[in-house]
Length: 387
Image (cartoon, rainbow, N blue to C red; front, side):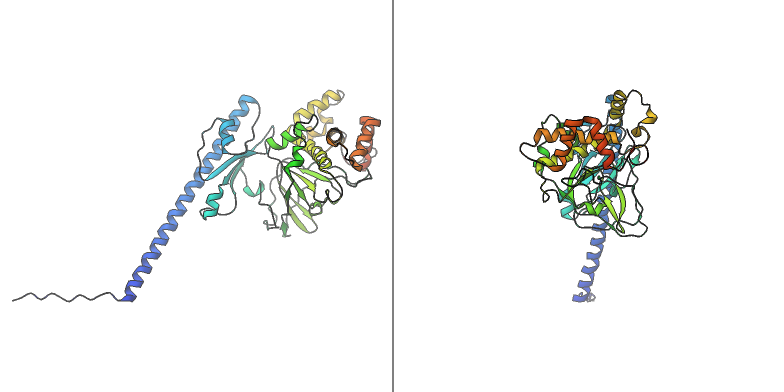
């Protein structure tokens, strides 16, 4: 007998499409899990690298007595003797003081554009004590965006005072920060910032009185930006320094996200007739306040040398950070020196007033004007401490 084989049934088009769909879903799941695993691997590697940089900073501090700032991975390797090879992250060290530093891992733009990584640039941050929130270090500039209400980063450093406002009157409210406030459900905004032209800062480079400020800003990645000072509750300020850490401050029923390690300059100064030389001089006033944050012991030692009658308990910076009449005097004094050096034929009501005061009355006259400026008369009743 012959053998008769069973007949074969062909797959229908619907069945083929269903099979392809199932295969596609499975492939998509496998690819998603694979991509997620790769990104997790990149993240874990970045965490370990940031930790290694932190340890290298501690070793460098023990060997040299100081922490170092680094603008990118290459500088990190050069300054700390490391050999970081990373295609996914750029590493930097900012906010360097005698007592602390901040290490950042930033996503490289190619990965962001390819969609492999999310658009937020900073993913990992740590300071001397350990991991910190990336949001407390930096945020993208631009339109106001939301920040979780009540999410107040830990303060470190303090806002400095600002040059006085107004072109003619020396008796006006100075700039300066206030104490940070919690959110309490109030909307938080990030005011717009615009970076100043490099030409303004370049006026300071190589000068006798302002080169130190140029170096301080460059070496510590200090941002210098134009802002609407009203957004920060500083309506009378020409400029103000905000210290090493970030804060959220209550202004007009809004919480303002203030990026630390920044000199904020009133965006209206050019329209008010302030030339580049005047703005550069004002920036050095705020850089002096920044220098107090970055090198407190140097200023403590200088104050002791100038006033041997003082003890540590008499010097405000040994007790708490912030302004003093002595600090404001040094800020105005240095701004005057820079102004006299770079102004050429420029004139400015504020700076010319302080320059004339220094020339005719010296330190005593300038401090008397500062007490009036701050509403501190006599000095021990209110406002800023003497030293």
